[in-house]
Amino acid sequence: MYAIDGPAVGRVFAAAGLVSAELDVMTLSRYWGTAVGLGTADRPDEEVHLRLPTGTRFLYIGRAISISVGIQREWVHPSSVSICPRCLYENHGRWPTSWYLPWSVVCPTHHCYLLSACPGCGNRFEPARTGFGRGLCGHSTTGRRGGRCGAELDHLPAPPLRDRELLDLQVWLMELMEVQGVARQGAHQIFGDLWAMACFALYMGQPRHLDGADAVVRRAFGSFREEFAHPLNGGLWLTPAQRADVHDTLVLAGALRIAGRIVRAEDPYAAAGLVEALEARPRSVGWRALRTGWNGASPLASAREAAGPRLGSLMRALLTPKQFEYDQSARRQAGLEHLSDREPEDGLGKVTR
Ligand SMILES: [Zn+2]
Ligand SMILES: [Zn+2]
Image 1: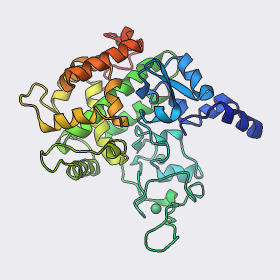
Image 2: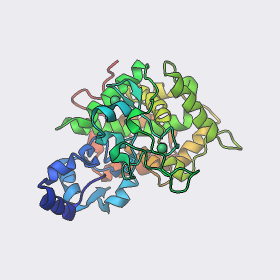
Image 3: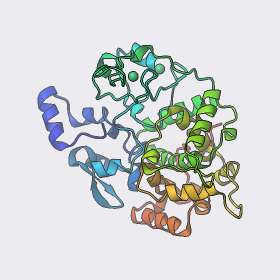
Image 4: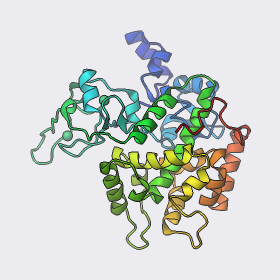
């Protein structure tokens, strides 16, 4: 789902007559330079973009790395999707590529939350599994040996969306994903900032920071925090796998909502301060957990390097001096320093509310 490499492009062309550009829009490389490519710390310019589908490699801080290594630095779910059952029904079982992205949490057409797991068996929706193409959940059920869940995907009930703020945020994110031309660079940085702030929200956010959110989101966010509460210090404790693996659209909706408010605020530092007292001494235990999380090798960990200059003072307050300096020098090495203290020219970063 991430990209199709050179030799495969040739084989698909021979079999189906599709060219590289047509294949690109069917994979996540469609979003390369906006919502994808955030973990590379490289400029999402045309040159790098063109290198991806044919060269099987892309750059990370000027170094060529393979797609399989690169994908571990991305915030994508290449093997599973979150689904809108009614969209599946209306599109005869076809689904958009954006459903592989954690940025997709609600359906603006049908005003519902996307389902990240099958209500029948509790498993995630994996298009590679038997049955998905026919509209059935293909996971085996525990009771009967060899039995399949078989839930009808296009008839599953999805929680209704009433939260206008989240709907606006989702529509904005979908527009940003598809932005073309020079505005892509501004969109890319917004996704980088949102990604870093989504981590901040996952570790530091509380249901009380979700005023105006739907009750299902507040409940899911609260249970997530309880489930992963550190047994000793009360902070949040996620194993590397869990950090890599926040799939629940309701939890993600909560995190994106908090992150969206911070990134779209006139003053992100002040907005983040409403979630966590940034100047507090001694610092909260959640703070230490966030820093530890940001130090690992999981996708969520690479998010801290994706934060841009607009979040400079905030990231300086959140990171250790060593982490902050490392990120700054990584940006310099990647030729991103020209972005500093400059707003995206097209106004994409401005407050829209
Ligand atoms: Zn829909
Ligand atoms: Zn199922």
